[in-house]
Amino acid sequence: MESSSWEFGRTVRRWRDRVRPEVAGVPVGRRRRAPGLRREELAGLAGISADYLTRLEQGRATAPSAQVVEALAQALRISDRERDLLYELAGHASPGHGVVSSRVTPSVQRLLDRLAHTPVAVHDATWTLVLANAPYDALMGETSAWHGIERNAIWRNLLGPRSRTVHTAQEQAEHEARLVADLRLTASRYPADQALRRLIADLADQSPRFAELWASDTPPPPPDTSKRKVVDHPEVGRITLDCDTLIVAVDDLRISVYTAEPGTEDADRLALAIVLGTQTLHAEA
Image (cartoon, rainbow, N blue to C red; front, side, top):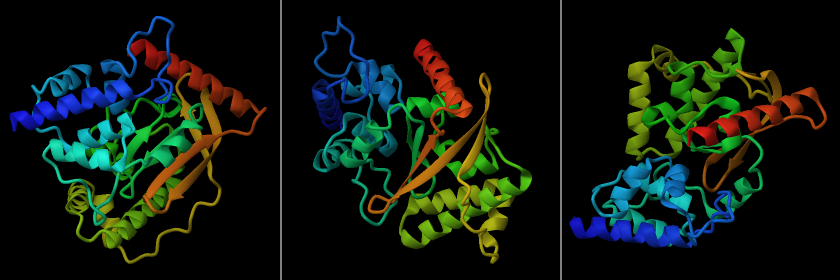
């Protein structure tokens, strides 16, 4: 196990050195000496602490979770074969076709790179957050501190802290019903996924509302065709935005993109919210 931990760390270090910062969306200063990503930059991209990454790279931290391995794989932008190797070195089986994937492929990552200045969040088929970019965090609040079931949008809507999205009681109830109905379809596509079954059991155990919706025979509300979302930003105030959710069919991902009509007051407020939030996130880093 010690040799595998050492090899895992050595591999992460080697791959970190080859990632160009500008490709990963990391600002490049004039005094930069490192050819690839700095340790703290990779840690930030993967949503883990720099201290933990140090221990992983030095082989002093054993048995990283599958979630950590996946986060590192995405941050390092490695190929599918390299991702399989990273899972193997960590002592995990690489996720197969019968389980919900949180894999962001290089082609999807290139799409996200082109939306670097637009709020974007990516969820897997269980509505668990895979990644959110800096403009999304600036608009909706910091997501890197969310762990485990806290990253699931169904849990956050039913049990979590209040979202910045403004809903009437009816809109919120319909939104919850749509999310649970979509999770039911996901469960039918991945009947052998043990993690998905545990998520459903945890949601049912923690939320009577989820248990009621899961057991209900009532058809879900029709799709929300308005796409309009009102976000109550703590510094800028209310911003009315279009929210388009794009489905990546093969990878079974949901990409939510928030935009405003150019030249409008909402576009100005969105731009200000992104600037203020990004400055705050950089100051805290």
